[in-house]
Image 1 (tube, rainbow, N blue to C red):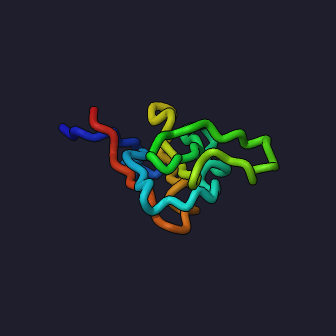
Image 2 (cartoon, helix red, strand yellow):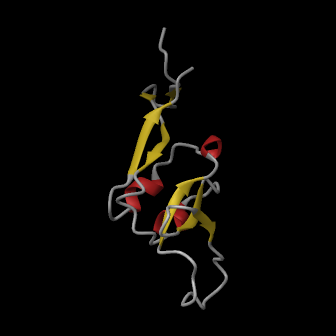
Length: 104
């Protein structure tokens, strides 16, 4: 018996979806591409201060000049909502994402 979640497709083939497992924040440039393609709200953009503290980033605020953070990075806010589409990994220019099959 398999220890990972598998799906049998109409063709009879077996597909093992892979779900977001980790995001390398050191490589992340905070471009937001992954955030825009995620259909489930798994990701959240945050600001990092000089001390490494995470602060909320207002995505509606166009005036980012007075920001209290050094850089923006993506985080996995709701991993449980991931459906395994891997759109985030496919669009990420820095290849920050790691995906893995779900254990059952």
